[in-house]
Length: 153
Image 1 (tube, rainbow, N blue to C red):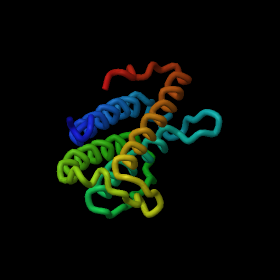
Image 2: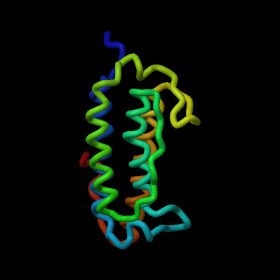
Image 3: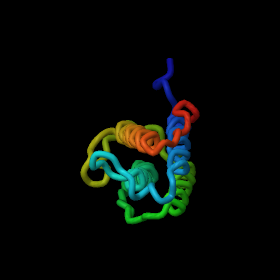
């Protein structure tokens, strides 16, 4: 009987499937609306996208090294968001295999404020992305734009 139902590599592949879909949502957004359009006082999808960028690779790096950084979110251009998204994806893919499997069950303090087992912290970042991507879908639909199919990861 295996110790877990999903391997670290399978978890990364699952996460990267979500990230691929979220990237397509960012791409679908009109350039002039990404950092200006919102509904009901919610943050723009550009701001939400930058939050996701500043959580993903820093979480992987933190799980691996115990060092947590909080990169700047002060970006306001779609092309730059997509560039940072791709760089983050590459960094995650490079660092992830270096994480010892036992590290996923260790309790860590992410970003100096969030305690929990590493696997739980990672799942939070994935859940946060899914939540914010849902907001992006609502924004796109309210702009009369069909978002990418949610099941095409």
